Length: 156
Image (cartoon, rainbow, N blue to C red; front, top):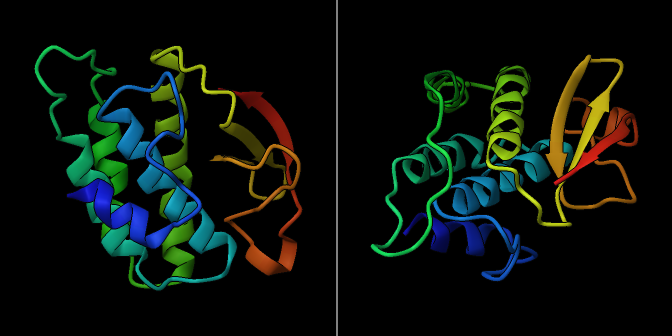
C-alpha cells in the first residue's frame, strides 16, 4: 500500500526503478525521494504523511522466497519519527538531515548498485542527501534559495 501512495505522489518514480535494491529498502528509498523532491521545491505539503509511509515501509517484510535488504537501525526509526513530527518546513529540513544519513548508511550496508541514486553534500548545511538526478543538484535543505548548492559525492 505504501508503494501505491508513492507512485501517486511522484509519477517520475516507477516500479522498475532502482534495480538491485530489495524490499523494503526499495520502497523506503522511493518514499525518501518523494520527500527530498518536496523539500527541494520548498513544499511542506504531505511531507509528514510521506514520512509516515516511509516508516511503514521500514517495517514491511519481503515476500517469502525473495531476497531482503538490510535491517534498519534504531536510529533510522528515530530520525523518521522526528520527520513525522515536524510541524513546518524548517523543522522537516532539520529532521531530513538525519534521515538522509541513515538512508545513506543503509544503502552502503546493502552494497546498493542501482546506477540511479546519487549522494550530494551541501557545504553550507554540512549535510548529505540522496537524489536521482546525477547532473543537476536539487538541494532539499535550502530549496529555491540555494537549489544548486551541493557537490556530488557517490553513486549507488
